[in-house]
Amino acid sequence: MSSIPATSSSVDFISILQIGVSWTIWSSKIQGELERTSMWHYVSGDITIPSLPHQLTSDPTAEFVVQVQLCREHQELKHAYKDALKADDKAKGLIKKYLAADQLLAVVSLKTLKKIWDKLKTIHITTSTGIIAFYIKVGMIQK
Image (cartoon, rainbow, N blue to C red; front, side, top):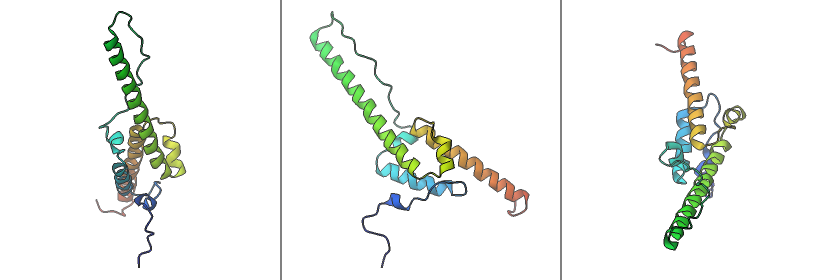
């Protein structure tokens, strides 16, 4: 008999990221969840948050059809910007949910998902390298 509830999601089984937790395992689980929810592209850089379009100004000399087309394009750009921000915020919330307090403090001021991910990766790869170097130095791991 399985002890896993039928209604649970894969996110329920992601451990909190803290020093000593394997970055490779944690990041793979988070990446899987972000891929499942179509938000991984913001981490990988395949999709970036577009810049907020400038205020549309009308040109009284332009034809009406041109003005309407410019207005539509401006609206589409605004919607793309808002949708990208919403997806980025949702993904940041997911990642922050699985961070220990010290990890959260390290990324709380960062504004985009990609910057948060890159910072966490840098922290954990540097820490892992440092721990391995320490164990080699004290003779607990063979060179």
